[in-house]
Image 1 (tube, helix red, strand yellow):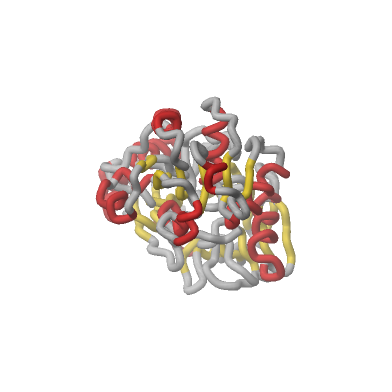
Image 2: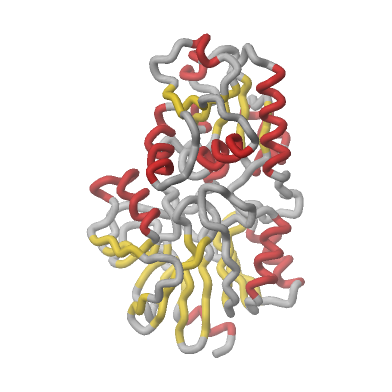
Length: 343
C-alpha cells in the first residue's frame, strides 16, 4: 500500500475523521453511529452518539459533563486492549493530555495509523504519560505549531507563582485555567512544589476536582469560594475558569493578582488583552520542539495535521522528507485559551 492510499480508507467527512473499513468516526463533531473519543474536552467528546468507545476515565468524564446525552452505549477500552471493528484492529495508547486521554491506533492490511488527539510530552502527575507508537501514518494536532512556541519548564513557572504569593500575602492569586485537566494539573504541580495551604475553587471547577480525587489523584485540601469571607482568602491561590478572570465574581477576592496558565501566554499581547498580571506559560499541548520530536519518533512517512497552525507544521514536515496534509477538521477549539465553564 502506498502512502496515497491511506486517504481511501481514512478521511474527513461532514462528521469528522472516518475510518471506512471499521465504520467509525474519531472525535466526531456531531452525533454519529459509532465514535471513538480520545478525551473528555468538549470539542472532542460531543453528545448523543449511539456507540461510544473510549477509556474508562473519558467515559466517566462524559457522563459527568453530558449526563443523559453522553451516548446510548458505552464501551470501555483500556490502554493496549485490541478491539476488532469491521475489518480493522483498534487499540488505545496514552496521549498525556488530560486524565483518560488516548491516541487511537488503527491497523488494517499491514498498515498502522495513529490518531493522536491532543497530546503533550511533559510529565504530568494527574494522567498517564504520552507513549510513542511507531506507525506509517501519524495524525497530529498543531495547537502550538509555530517555532515561537516553546513552553517554559513547569517547575520554573510554578516557582514564579509561589514567589509572587509569598511576596504579596495580602492578595489572592486568581489563576484562570481550563476546568478539565489544566486546573487539576496546576494544583498537583503546586503541591509538588511544597505548597500545602488550602487552595480555593470557583464553583465550576469543584465537580471535576472531586472526580480527580475519586480517581486517586491527590490534590490536597480544596475549599469552595462560595460563602467564604474575603479576608480568609488573603495570601491564597484560587482556581477558576478563564471566563471568571474579568467577571464580577472575582470582586469577592482580596485584591486579586490575575494569573492565566496557557501556552498562549508566550504571546505578550494575549496577556495584555486579558489584563493578566502574572502570565504562566504552562500548556497541556505539545510545543513546537515537542511536535517535531514526536513526528520523528513515530517514524511515520506521512503526517496529517488536524487543527491549529497547520501551514507552518506542514512546511516543516515536508522539509523532513515526509508527506504532509492539513485536514482542517470542523469543530476543533484551542481549549488552552477557551472560556470553558463546564463542571
